[in-house]
Length: 470
Image 1 (tube, rainbow, N blue to C red):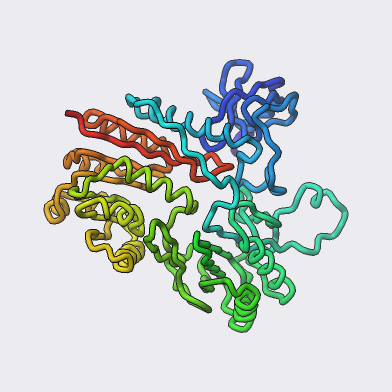
Image 2 (cartoon, rainbow, N blue to C red):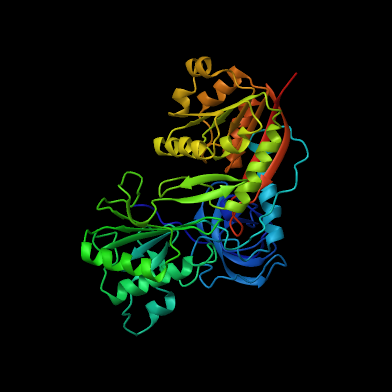
């Protein structure tokens, strides 16, 4: 039987800094770090520990003696329960400060890298309602508040359409208003729930695997197109069409109305057939006159406006003159590849997801871009000597890997090729720092530009320019 952690209480702890993953830092009386979940740097609090380790504690504030001057009033009524926007109680200028600090700390401490002066982080023009994709889950046993649990009242409505409670796979918080996606996102979600309850459509029970309604995905584009996808666990044609017809009539602005019937244990749609109920099976995003087709399975940066800024920085760092061969690693649907193509002689994109490469090729045809080639394969396997021999030695490599960073074999292959420039776009500066450390003997870092894609959260993107040492 696991030994229970003895909970300790530390009084009058000053919160001194922000840490990774949205946590903050205080110091215990013995000098050990305390990682906190519900404070802002500058707060003075009493802490109850939840975990004790050799080098640190984890805990939460149970009493506030004074509040930080960095605090602001959260705008969302779900703040503190929903785990989506954990930094809503911190002023935006302070969020940017700590994001920039995290990037610099990771590059210096993890990568042991020599850095130029960092360009100030690029903040997001929109601090709310900036996401173009949201996914909500249905549940027949919603998360209950403490007041509801302690109340003697019989709770009739236990259905929810919202977000998972952090760390609880089977508990869904019913969302009244979300501040992450522009209208009509909230209206579509609320109407879907209201109609389903009124007409007896059952909500999913993840523990016992029953119920009709499973998830709702809403995607929007900067030119006003809307995609709605309802995922059903049970195949009830009459009730399914009842709901989808209602959504189609109530929200005629929906461009693409889709559904999935998924009886699997998990709710991922990537191995499922997507069925178009009304409209097209896709929407379009536009950027500098380029059109990108987005279907239900497509990856696209979830902050469209800030993605444009990120891509402009990437293109500026590459500083192409028109005669370069460019490799775009982890190209996704080829957005960056096409975005830089008019400044390059040729761009070669590589991606492991076949559907993404099909989208990339289709988008290139639509945009009348004929100097891009796209290839599908696992990066560490396809990006080899034979591939280089067939496609040419690149002058510039742009790489935008997932959160785990690049496989060491991919880093080694870049070093073998030794292009003049590498532009490394990352959503995780810790793994970026690890990769860059492997490259520091051959390359010097000449530019670093953090970009805030996700206001009210701790997440931050970072773009680094590497130039080969002479």
